[in-house]
Length: 425
Image 1 (cartoon, one colour):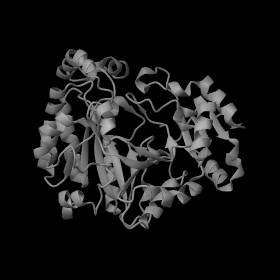
Image 2: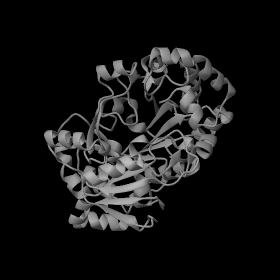
Image 3: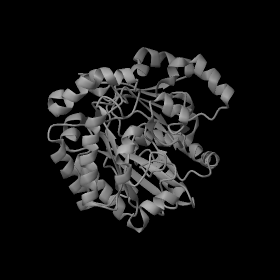
Image 4: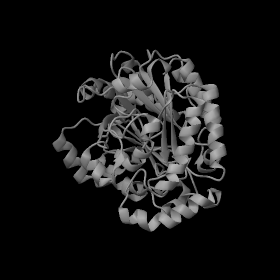
């Protein structure tokens, strides 16, 4: 587990009523340096603390001058009915920060629904149920706002007992991503949740666990687990300058690739998501190096491409050092900003880089990946339908039917996956 030095560590009272939670807590606290660990007696007290600490107003790391590890709250998942959930959320609104309520255990991602696409200006994604147990991250990526607070659910044995019913909600779903609200490997093996979930999915005939490995290289504890090929590991990765300048405390580019190599050698399916792709100076040369290293050392079945987004150019300037970016892309972002705002993009692709600038980026990356490994599937992540139409012939997929890193049927046994990946995967 990453060594953490938060200003504040809190434990909700019900944790101490469960021996398995106390055991997990004690293991994790061995890796945490803090002056004291406070017990919080009830929801009302935690709600007041959340308000006082401003946990709901987390800023992007790149906008913070004095950086320290996030506060940590250890608590439990709650399995209340809808009426109880609604009443509790209304009574304690500050517990919505990082889901201190403990309700986002199995959450439906509606990103493929027609209404969602319309509301988000055509951003293409796929709906699915996904699993969560930690929210908040100890890494300090300048463009990310998952700092400020880390909320950890400790009752993972009880959590596992609900998996059967959750997986029955969508019998056709094959892949369950866990946990893109953090880089969960940072907390292992002391957390112990990876082992529980890997071994659970090893017994599932048609379902697969996808661990969001993110930007960590902490994989030693995974190598001897009995996964039976039913766990997929997904890394977010960027080229050298991006990793070194904008992704503080993360594993290096080489370390992430080496972690993937070791996991693939141990029989896991490994994937990379180039995310977020930031157009630094010399981005072509650096990404060519990244692609070369990936295919020299390992063999991903899928690579997804996700351009830097989620904010307009003014917000981007606040969290990134624009002097490190490609001047051509900076000019393009500034010139396109009024038109992008007028169109109303709210998330994913479409901002701050205009369409043509992203086309140039994707054209280069797709060409380099397909030259290095013609049989590796390449997908676009959180992109517009217009962008998909530009590349659908080269990718061999459409925005309505594609294989990506975390789509609900993007596993062995999925019809399109088997056709696109086949024996090469």
